Image (cartoon, rainbow, N blue to C red; front, side):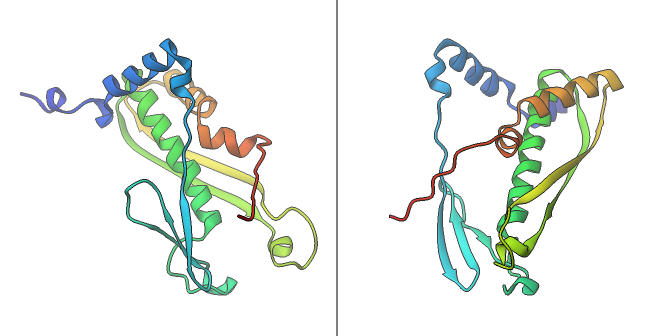
Length: 173
């Protein structure tokens, strides 16, 4: 038995993904999902996010922002979420297209002016821009890689969320 026979392309379970896609195509309501997280403050600028049954995800601020630098801060986690979402998109879509990925790294950065966050002056407290640089090595020609890239960028839930005007309601319970 060869490695290919025991391990799917890029280790992606295309049958599971294809089954879900077919279920959503057959019954669109199946695709309407709700995702959630619960965050608990620990002390100072430290908190933990709990998601499903996974270990808590720690958050803190760098010492220069008054934290203890024990974990990534929320804006770093947001950038990582975009990179992780794109990685999922590349793995799934490359596998569906029969493309084997030999190496994938996504560098994500964002421009953030701390003046509004710190109360120095009013304005936009979020990123003014985010860039992602995809470094992909795969067994496909340039045209196939470009098509893969278009598909991934065009279907990234986190990428779409960050680039759209999405209502956010924050209520005090």
